[in-house]
Image 1 (cartoon, rainbow, N blue to C red):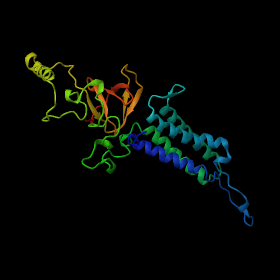
Image 2 (cartoon, helix red, strand yellow):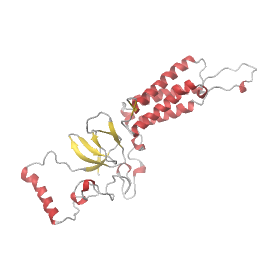
Image 3 (cartoon, helix red, strand yellow):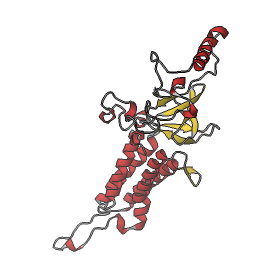
Image 4 (cartoon, rainbow, N blue to C red):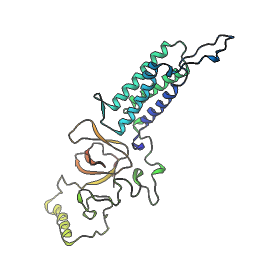
Length: 287
């Protein structure tokens, strides 16, 4: 999973899950030692001494957080009909519910139970509010971080020269058999003002195509030139059949190929050849 696809809400969930796991090793309850009695021989129990409490509060919360993070790496995956993210949210809320009633039932709650309740509260809040609150939907790591720069010019969103599937200008075969000299939009093709080597037949064909809009009026509405692009933050890619569940997630730091435009949306192709609809095209960077 690309770490740059994580949001601030994911960071809250991960931090709360770590604190919840640590709290499971702390004292579950405390007691007052009578005067004159050596209490050093008594061990204070923790959550690992109570299987029911361990599974219903501490491990349930940690597993829920793990499912939330995994759902970002594998969007669309389901468990018993529920999306992994939805299943994770349900587990975090269940952990908070159980921790709340458990601490009310214990006379002398220990540090482990108190800290566990606070961690479960933050975990459930981050899981529920993460997709809703704009501040938590922001990327966890800024796209303009220092790790993204390279010598000779900064590459967009952490792309390194000559590495990865879709690096513009890399030594790769143009998709669908197009050559860089054909102006396909393949990154690294000759830019405006740079001469391209072509035979006379290709030059005549290009000249005829350039004259068509002038002779017949405006260019056709469906005229579209595929191009490479990168997204500023992680965005879902939906199926072309209109399914509401995403089939993939486009992550910053990777170049993708736009092969078609449908209204305000783009038909994008991933590294493994899957095609889908990118509904949110705001802020994308063309290669």
